[in-house]
Image (cartoon, rainbow, N blue to C red; front, side):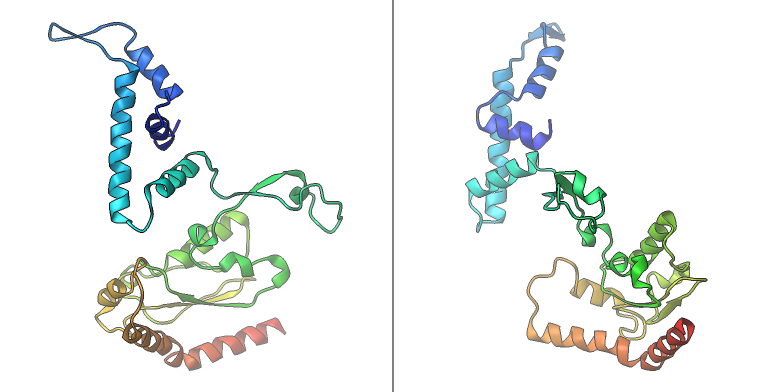
Length: 254
């Protein structure tokens, strides 16, 4: 039983079975400590858990005062019982030879958010039937600007999907350049362009990263203009490099 589920049962004055069993096993008799006799009972534990849960919900409600107590409670209840990513399979038992058999058998299917799996949509373009020659990766990830392309290469290697080797100089993680090309035998060419780099940001890369972090709230008009200008430099500064790689990919495909 998860901690959230246990606390919800305590909040509703219900005896959480798994916790109750644990308590009864550990406190089936009297526990001596320094000559004193201590007795535990399930009700006192439930009272304690109820108070803790009330305290947590109260704090959350204050932090997010636009959401009321009952809604928070419902959200936590769903979190305790919901299998993340599990959805009804609308193809279940469908009679269609064009649909792979594996998609027809199960009533439910488990999915993962592509942004959680990898914060760049490489795998949507790497399907064999797409026969991709060139991928232009404009990486806007927070933190290490090479995480997505590196993890894509590692995953493709495990799944035997054609993808070039990705070797990044150690010093480039904190001070990335604005244009990288990765190539291999019988693999697509991958162009990788980190959003903030030494070319468009100079020595202020960390300053820009902090200004436009993942949990940034609404952007002012000035922030939007500044970001578009910096991002735009990655294309205008590399116009000739991009055209060169596009032409090479076309020639290789012929």
